Image (cartoon, rainbow, N blue to C red; front, side, top):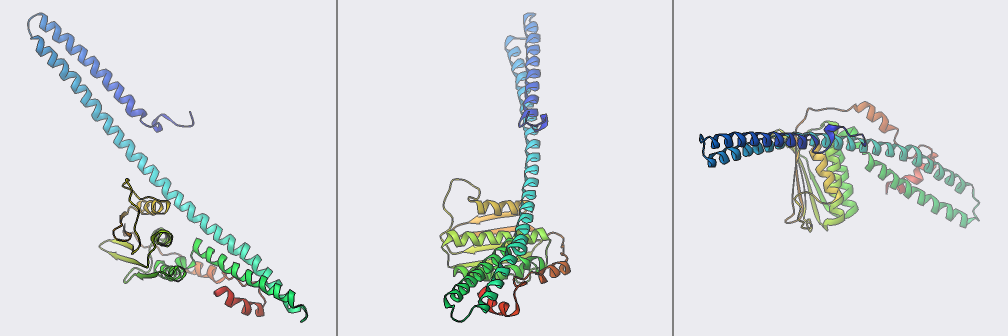
Length: 331
């Protein structure tokens, strides 16, 4: 039913094995009791010894059944944890693919269309007579709003799929993100990555970037912090990522695991890479992440660079319009 086979039913094989062992132990106990009764009747054994013999038989049966049941449960638990981990890795991979797709659609579709609209508004503004001051003012305001919207869409596209991460690696992309974060939220943010490798496997770089991104988002939303420090290091055969703030810390709770969607996502990314996550909250919040060092995997820089050269939001602007709109978009 519902497409589940016998092996996938939770506890199915274990419970059946337990029932078989209990039946066998019960039959063994009856046989031993019968033998002991016959021997007691003939005077060969005392009645108390027959009871001890029967109890020993059923106790042995229960012990064997329990041991077998625990062994089956351990094997089943390990298998289910492995399948859950594989599913988690697959979901994160699909999520990154979806982010890349949305980033491309924002850039190739919406951004280009809005750029064309802004270009047409600039052309209309140039052809309006001097006395149509109201229309010129309205077209100027529309162009300003379009420039602001294009800037926000460019930022969204870069947050969904940061081009610096693919082109230059983890450290330059985090430096840019940390700088932008500090300026936007007025929080003193510092990145220390002295001696960190230039490139890591793509999945490791993506995980470390997303973990830092999520942790900084949590700081901005909940921590009320004034300072944040991000430390990247590769020593002793492992990668270390420490993120510390001086905020109000995490709320107390009865559970032992992380709470909140952000921390759960961080924990899943760390677990997918066979790493460890430790969280302390007195004072502020400190995240300590350790990942095993994997073999280096360098992406195709030439292909990424060629794609980055085409990533411009001003492709359809006339020359004069590009010069006029650029300051607004860079603001």
